[in-house]
Length: 232
Image (cartoon, rainbow, N blue to C red; front, side, top):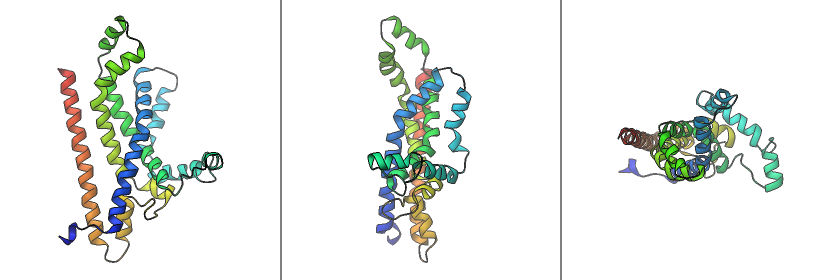
């Protein structure tokens, strides 16, 4: 029973991780749907380059993304200095910066899942709706979007799981500050560096594996349900 009891540090890290991952997904979802629609439906010069840039976080070391975020959004960064001087917003070394780092690292997974669901939508249904007088916006919200919902949910779950596990970009951009930026992976790392922290590290490891497996299984079930629905 002692193994199941979380310490205040572990509880703080878990709550912060859920908060960061939630905001990361919520903030990136509208942009992700828009980007997925553009990649799936619009042809333009340099499309392959844009697609590559969007998926770049999947192949770059997370530390590189964290460093670029620090250069851009740090207090003296290109964008960060303007945010601080104009709006009084600071992202570096705050939980908001952790959410930004998690959102960027998870964004390609979200876009890919939404794009695949959009590409599977029968274009003839949209054409039929337009011939009946529906405008492009109405077609999207009444035909396209409902058919995309399983893919959107799957993308959200994958992005949420990726955000929960983000480490490299987070620690580089916002450091490892307890109660402010110390998410579950960072807390686990901290516990491995202190004497007697093995049990706490194992608890957080089990929690991380459980949350990740839940998101992956749920995403797979939704993907299968979506495929069966489209075949029907």
